[in-house]
Length: 382
Image: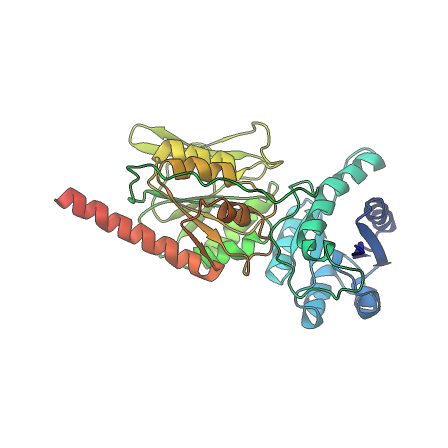
């Protein structure tokens, strides 16, 4: 079978950026730049002729900017993967979150102040190429005559760097023999597609949720603060960006800050948030594994954990640590995940108690918390 290269349409009004991205993509043997455009209007006109497998789309452009282009593109190509290019500014962060809400698949931040073209190219190669391959992985194994897939959601054949690896066969870890089903905290991890998944999950939680929620969404600084603010406006529970020394309170969601690992530390009867800049894990900081391990240390098995859509396998080792303590673990299903990497690895490993559509995970968390509290109250009353 002949394997064809992935076709990418690059849309950016800055000729230097456009050329840089095209050069980086063209150097990869699995990718082909099928065309480029200097604004959204030109890009839309080229879509049918070029039939790209993915579009990279700058946010700020003349004629038709990235957000307006995305809105128009989604009318005719509802599942075509689109990666937005955003500046690492508050305006760029807000625009990137808007784009995700409008149906963008993911985003990358433009390399700025790198000091050299070579470093800028390395940044694009590291951040963009793995995302392209994850989002289009259903195309990589098809023949050159295959049509564009409606929704490529095969199990992940790539690692976090975009390299082909054998699909893992991971042994399930047994639950602790005396595992408790009391719930004292909820822990969530997600990446690509996470903001929309989090909105679906967190809006299903009641304002009187009896436990706190801690979560990692892979995002850079400033993006996590704005994400927390957006979710706080839409959810009955309170949502804040975590800062060092916050005592965990019921009905509050603590979002790990960009570029900082979030961990929990028990101080007597209280559990406090702490942050550090230890080395990235799974190429991520914050990392889900780091948070989940600290949750296992602070709460043992009194945890409901959920791993949502995202590329790579961050969260897998943390789920093992939680499962060994008797924690309850949920994973988002393949059909509703933008990328079934993180939840896919957890599901394949046998660590998940249930694999659910994202629309059911919030209600399932609330149910398990509620029933766990009832059992605990009954035990104390008895």
